[in-house]
Image (cartoon, rainbow, N blue to C red; front, top):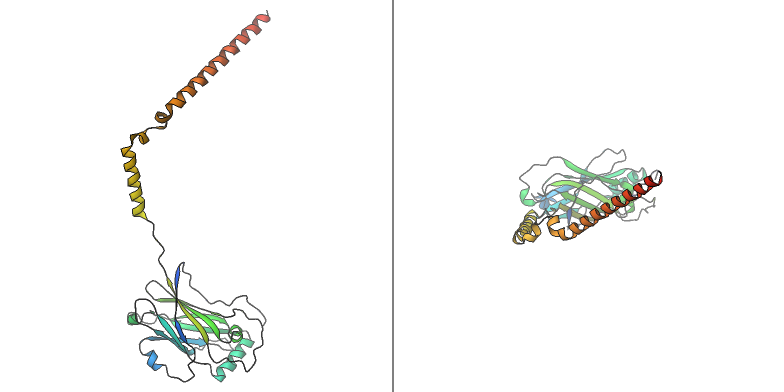
Length: 255
């Protein structure tokens, strides 16, 4: 390969805190097997594209099967690559092309599919050579917002970099070995304002019950401050008297 990247990462939407929810994958479906029964109102297509001319032409790779419930629950059914697609994928890898996936922007809860129509697609990609050298082993992450709406998708391969390894013709590139996960945001803990105010009130009550704590610094420590001030005053007076006597003797000796 003309250029090697240390990592093959897709576009990822950044969210500070996430909760990882693993899902089930069925990677053994053969080409031509029907997906209609699983598409009936509770599924979302997963599409992919890999072209020598780098012009995206997406076709169905499988289906995300949405499960009813409050928390997002998704399983994945995938087609196998045909012989024609396996050959094309190797050709794209040879010219350092890209392997793309995309999913529509939808809610991941099956019972909320009627609330919002599909508004475009979310796309991610890796280098095609990484898909070939990993023998179609990839990790796909779906990122949602707090309402379960899909806001991002990412894909990486295992291993995650192209090493220029030759892939023999007899190597199995038919079945995808995919790990699918859902990344949902988790609310960060808020400030404990009520507890703080309660502690402040308790401290105020304690000070009110004990007047000694309300005294000023001087009222608390006058017995130490007064002797120190008197000592400094007496020391200054002695210095002044000694200086005056010395000056008189000097003036008398000059006559």
